[in-house]
Length: 413
Ligand code: CAA
Image (cartoon, rainbow, N blue to C red; front, top):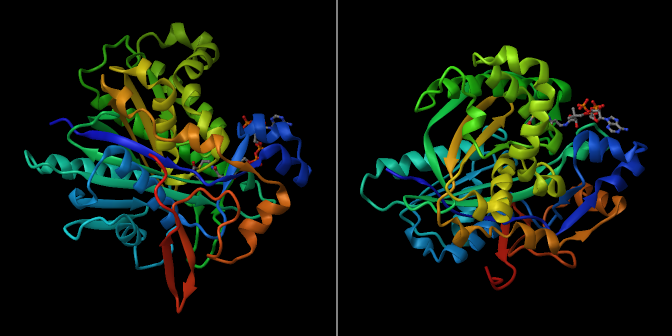
């Protein structure tokens, strides 16, 4: 049975901090952030928005663009690692804000940045399990990445949400059935209850990411059907490779590792080894770089990061990629990883606009004092600042209850 992503929609906050300005304020050469990490700007969420409002804004845009009646959604999953309550799920607030019907399975998923993929796979399995019954799930990945001021993680913050309609008529991506998974209990990145900012063992987290990539890729390579010939690299069967991208340079490091693993597994390794760096760089330029444009301007969106890459790629290259196969790698600290593939359908052009370009074009660039004011006041809720582009706001918290509302009539999808 064909199952996959029918359409995507993206929400990105209306404010962005140029990394060159952050570097100057922290006394660091700007190139360390713009070249060393590959980030140009990071999206900043003001106090009136959180994962609920961002998820709802992405979801509303998606339902409108796809002309889907919210009553027909049978499963609503929200993946996040910046949840707003230890018991009440983000998904149930979103359920109300979007007017999704009562006959719906609704819950939140957490496994660091992997949860978006966990939700996508769960939704796809649920659609498959329906057999001939028409089932459609709404999956939303939303996060605000926050690290301590002045810490090495600070330039790898960001915020955003990606909503995906998962069903039997995929026009954005047909999911392959084989996947490669990997899990290991590691302390690379975590956020103890009560803390707003993540704790991270930065260099170790990069090692954990690469170890998980090796595990998931090796599992996937073995499961690939039809099986690879002894002289064949999996990369040769892929038009693009997308990675969970906390910062673009991480995707470059990941792809370098993947190319080496891929060729080492073939009988041509001895011939490839002397020119491995050259081959990996060329492969990165062709397969990976085209998918990183949005991440470089939004920063880390944790659960949504991989799907922001997908949405951005389809927007810029969808037509050219029709009929081609993409590889996707998802990593969540802690850790769990999954490598899977999908094929871009022939009629992708009709759904290739997820709103990434438009959202980025409308943003306001802010300076460091404004960034610190918006993110560190500790206030939740309030009036939207000038230029705010979300459809929903967090009014505030009263008696430990969060109060949300719709801010404006829907913009054209
Ligand atoms: N010009 C150009 N490049 C420069 C430079 C300059 N003047 N100065 C330094 N650089 C380069 C360095 O050479 C380095 O590049 P390589 O890694 O290719 O060698 C790069 O800039 C980073 O510099 P540092 O090695 O000094 O590292 P850092 O102290 O800036 O920390 C980090 C980098 C560990 C990634 C840190 O930003 C961090 O902790 N980030 C949060 C954790 C994270 O994102 N981990 C990723 C894997 S875990 C994951 O994926 C889950 C998740 O989303 C959190």
